[in-house]
Length: 289
Image 1: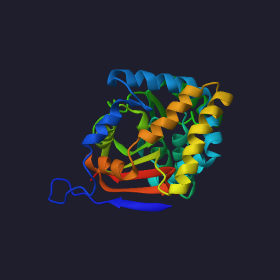
Image 2: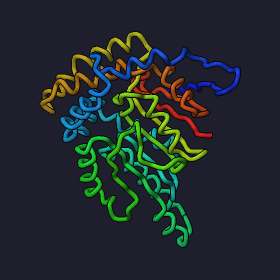
Image 3: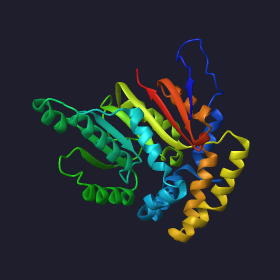
Image 4: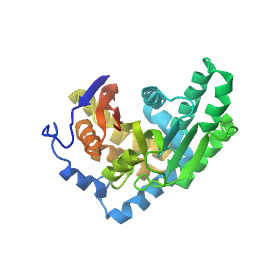
């Protein structure tokens, strides 16, 4: 694992350590390796996730050999959730991250919160799962029923767009997005919305498939990505094209350094990222000051 910090002082004479993001806007109209009109991308991505929704978690297990579970655990560990928090998990339709947050909050409560505060905190805790795709949300709701997460009302399912959230300014203690931001049309709009809805002191955390920096490992990873994953999608989910897109979208996503710069440009402070498995994935974080 490697932890990198991006130093940025907005509005001062300390210039960005990284190049400007002006050329990154070309990524906003990419659909994998294809260039498409901005107004078409959301529908195309929506079709992909509608197609993969029923097999999404199974394919995550197969593609990552189960490691995605550890990566999500790391994301939630860095969030450090607490009873009574208001949290927004974006692009989290199947509930994987939200369930982990609630489980961690429940463990905190069990460690000795006084009973007279426990009921109040339980009532105040709200984990909003926001996803643009209703099929993904339906999968998450079914999983929540199976896990018994529907009893206390802490989990709230919301169909919405990460680029124009229907939440008030300064309303959230935390914001997470896992494996979702590379699929949006305008990354900078998503980051701006995340900053808007967070309270001062609120934390932004993003888990995303990223770029491997070790040359030999990168060659092996690329070979696996382009040769194995689409074939696996065809065999298991009967959908090669959707998984071909998912692989291509990783390649088109900004590098760790460039994405960290975009997070800082959105107004976040204390921006840093942690590479996992040599950069196969990265956890990016920032704080709204």
